[in-house]
Image (cartoon, rainbow, N blue to C red):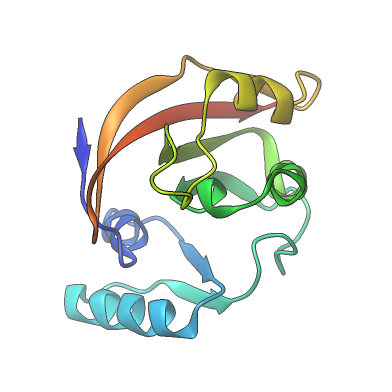
Length: 153
């Protein structure tokens, strides 16, 4: 399985299918690129400039959360906070699609491993599917990566 560099691509794709989509990023530059891509595709995405550790979204307001390469940039304590925040905004039975590098690349990433998923995802909050390897493409080239889907209890 191969994924391409995002630039709002997941959000644009889902909006094109008719879903109400909220795209959140801490980078204004990334949001500007994503807005341009949504406009080019003629779809509406609600773009929010915010930190994923403190999302300005209502509790239990989301059916689906997609992470394409955020969590592998966070230190462990922030990963813990991030997973708690995702648990907060997901509705019961909502899904969290997590994709991130499965190994460190020159000190750049915190690898998303089976052990990390087991540590971060409290079984009273989430049930996790299998951890699957795949290749995620980034500006720097292909990254050996991990994909897991967690379901909110």
